[in-house]
Image 1 (cartoon, rainbow, N blue to C red):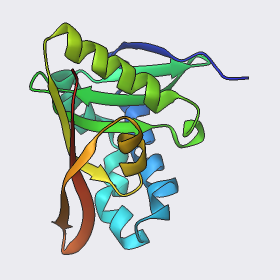
Image 2: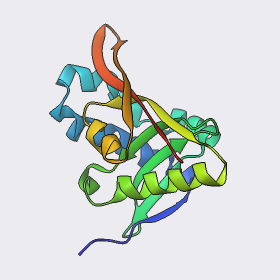
Image 3: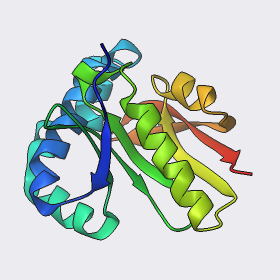
Image 4: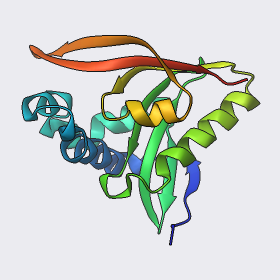
Length: 160
């Protein structure tokens, strides 16, 4: 049986949970496509500290997905059509959380007459999900963090 996924706006008390989703998804899911060294520079232990996230999220106001009374994913959608952070709880991958978040993003884009949406840093792991939602790769990128190279993709799609 599929759990019902609800979408709501960010609340300040979400910051710690979102930090854990970010860290755990990278370390437990993205590790399939990246080395331990790569995930450690992408999501160091310090990324579990809520304070910095609270400041960021109070500005970006991520879209929150919930199911069974818990936060199971989040996405940041900016007024220019940019999708920044897009993460699902590692135990909820493949259960419709990402699709629910993407549906909400597409609805917000439509409501705000945004005809082009894009993400500037889609991971190797997330690329098939974005392609399933009609995004196309614009460019493969090599990003360097603390001397460690990570591959990601700039992807985009039209909304109309």
